[in-house]
Length: 510
Image 1 (cartoon, rainbow, N blue to C red):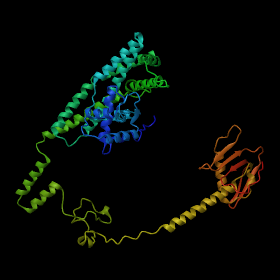
Image 2 (cartoon, rainbow, N blue to C red):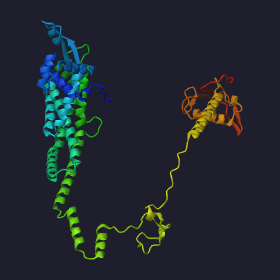
Image 3 (cartoon, helix red, strand yellow):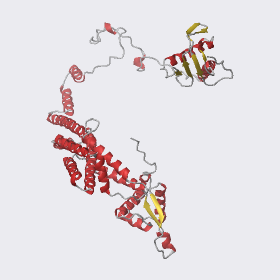
Image 4 (cartoon, helix red, strand yellow):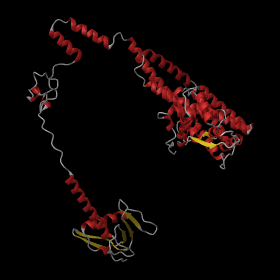
């Protein structure tokens, strides 16, 4: 699935100092479209602004500037009205230009309206929607057998609208449910009542949901046995789509219908054998019920407590006030909080295995304490932070060394460049570093599978140097000499292509 890409200027009208005016202007166009008025003049827009709640006075220049900005964002288009009769030049100037929403403008305003609707609405789990989906599937099966194409289209549209309602309400309710499970810091009485009502709501929804899901899945299978393509073609005939442009809208319409049907299957009868989403919803609901009941139990248990932390501290303070002896006060303090005077716990005996952690301090061997601990609160004296060394010279040396290594590597590849096919024995005597590069290429070639002609190919990790290896027609043995020894092996026919070819080439031989 391709990522959703929103035009960058599509929702710019919702921000800035004049966002209220821009939204009101688009709202005015939206209200006009509801009454099938697609083009508005300056006076019409001003009248519509008052009807949508914009009560501030606005000059023609300001309104024109706002419309020009919306045109720059490709939300509004302007045309000249040639069908009107104008009596004066002033009337021509005011009524000649007609403004209308572009397709992008309609989508932008619809997005804002949908966002505000979602913010103002609440999700729900409605068994009535499941029953409606099941009933529409039964009606669709009946219409496919004996109904008209128009009835197939209308029933299919109703089915898709119910599915969309199920998806939207479920997603929103699940979001609100998860936020409720994480809620904290609210009034405990309200919290208890809301969660108790939510548990009852979930239990009612989950009752007989398996039976409803099975009935819907069975009816989906029955319609697919009839034939999805045939059903969609009949619905397309019943839709009576207009062809206002050169392109046929039927293909896109059918693709949209197939996507909606795939969504229906994902909810109740997945084709890939995965768990239906309705089962996932049932698991989420049951898990939420268990979590909510656990929270309610904790709330109930906290209400039954005869004491609280504040009451415990008040009682402890009363005990402190009535004890007469200082030693008794210290014992009460140690018993209540488990604290005592400082013993420098960060200092330990060098061999801690010889001293038990339960040994009293007066029985444990002494630990050396720095004299600075009493005067400054520190056990060690810290000197001044050292200066940051200059690493420019180190970087330059590393860069120079890297350049030398690259040059040496390039020289090795140049020496191995055959410029054509040759015998392995033609290399003769090589430096050990060059021989290691050649041996690496031979190993990669021999490790690859031969092609039908028996040719093997290999290359370096970066793919810049390639070797082609062919089995010789004879059984000659190649002998390569290096400063560290002699290499012997089958005298293959090799071809090495390396970057940066020099002027000199090895002679080709076979």
